Length: 256
Picture (cartoon, rainbow, N blue to C red):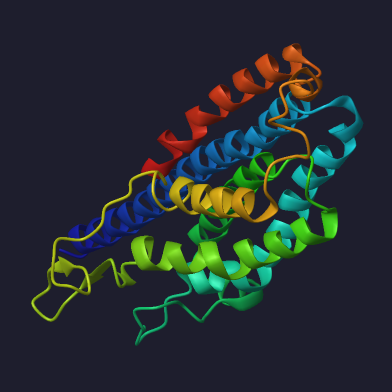
């Protein structure tokens, strides 16, 4: 009898070890997959840089490249400080407007998955910000664009993310009947990979920016039209292929 009890204890111990190994293995696979997808999305900024640089006149190339660097550098800093907290920092008793926990990655060590989600969603946030740089190309100063980037990645984009993706926002939350609904009681908004959250927000920012700054001086003068042609078609094509390649992280990575 003692032998059977001993074998049972050893089997239980081995099963526990096997379960722990399986959990670590799955965690590793999830992390590798999300990091790969995140790096592909991050690589899209190389595509944006090439496409936008090729689409503007040569004299404005440095300006448009600097804007793309600002989006990634300043954008990720804002995401680190405020953005993630407002977007996905859901407290125990959440509001339906925005989150307010996990500032400066506080509490991330409670779950390893927080780190990969932070990086992947941060790459999304920067992508939403960089959509605007092309719409206002050749007629926006860097300081103005830096201010826009800070607002977009700290507040505007994160709040919209919370509304749709946090599970507690006005467009997708669980009511008292355990049903997913919007604030109006209708079926929830479902955005699998950012068609609305990323591109609609970035697109609205782009069109508003284009309306505010207006067209380039002489852009619609028939005598000067040829002067506004992009200076490098190869850059445009290479940028397009980089963006295309990055899309294989954008959508598949959203399954993580």
